Image (cartoon, rainbow, N blue to C red; front, side, top):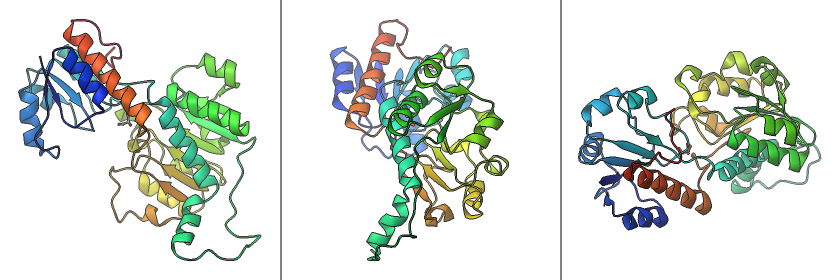
Length: 319
Ligand code: DGY
């Protein structure tokens, strides 16, 4: 069985695949054009995919030999699951192993924005340390404030738990269904979407992205948020309308924003949001720790090995 891996992943994953007797194909050059990438896919049975390549009807029509795809990510919004189902192609993903790292980034962004880290870091870089000023560069404390989680799954739970432990924040959440563990362990309260946006001091997005949620967080939402609130998105850039977010920030409808994902992604170099001192932007590094990436490599390999043995993938995005 030929496994095409489009980018180097941590060695543990490669080793597991090799020890299972699978043939691994790496591209000679990792910066493939779409056509070159497609050729590799056409010659493979299984793809271990790193990145946001689209797996849609067109792809499946052009690569009829593909039997399984193992994503090197928890998110599977890059795949048309309906199409994969029709062709009985299992889509593996890598949940759990990156929940801690990704929620750490949400937590870091929340604090960076609350304490105005970008603004102050820029001052230092500009050789503008300044005198101690009792009224300047003041942030806000998070103790006892309300954290709103949109999408309380594994990553959202970890974020809520950190915020509870560190700042005794009140947790409210909006989700497809109730999260009983969070309600019991963290006192989290289920609220409607309208209540979530109106009551949150920090609103952190952690849901799986679906096309119908495109730009759900737009001007009509930012309008209803508290003026001291902080918007955090570490899930998918498609959840927010970036121009609306920019306007909400300059019109002081909300207080600040922390983004590990942008819309579009990568962010355009002249996006005006980058000029704002109340914004912190990171380049989609939620899972970028040695521990999480090793875990992702292992999970992706486990998915492929299970498939090669005609077993169900341990982490499969298809219903
Ligand atoms: C994930 O695992 O979904 C990360 O966002 C990387 O795509």
